[in-house]
Length: 272
Image (cartoon, rainbow, N blue to C red; front, side, top):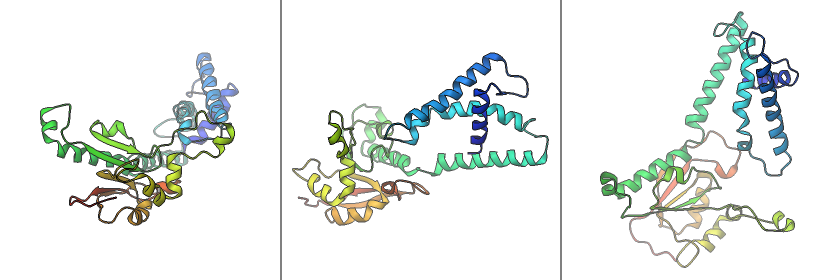
């Protein structure tokens, strides 16, 4: 966001002993610390760039470091805060604040909100099936819940939000290819990869009586998979019982669309 230019300036100043953390002169100990932080901020993404598997979350630890480094140049540029010395700087400061506030609201309450709220709904469904447990504080539920998550790995918070061990849940797995040769690793596909190559084939081979998994009470998936499941899941087995908006945009086509939950029909349906 708008602090990035100031962070880049701060890294340069720290490495050349020119960093100012305030309008006054930087004491020597602060210079040493900021130089160390600048080296870390450059070294971490540089080293991680050498590996083939890259994710944005790998560089999250340097965000607080960049914030600390950028504080000095920001304070110096907009001095005195909160009313800079010139009107252009004043307008620029308030624009920066508006951008950050907007981003905080979007990322904190709108973007990817469905993958969090689905857990609250699933927990409420489980608690409604076990009112005695909730009211009395018992640790064991009489009525268990089965849940299947047909999403790419790590799409939802999982156990940290499901909480109850009686919610018997499974999800598509993505174990790393440990122990395989270099040649085998290049051809390795985890369960999620195999599923998204051909969802219909995976469901036919793995779901149902006598197969790897039985059809659960709840199926959770992203909206982009809805038409495929409508064709592949036995007719009359499920009905939609919950749907929420998830994201304005997403860079992974597998995670596009609302978060949808299908529930098993209450009337018995014979499924082979």
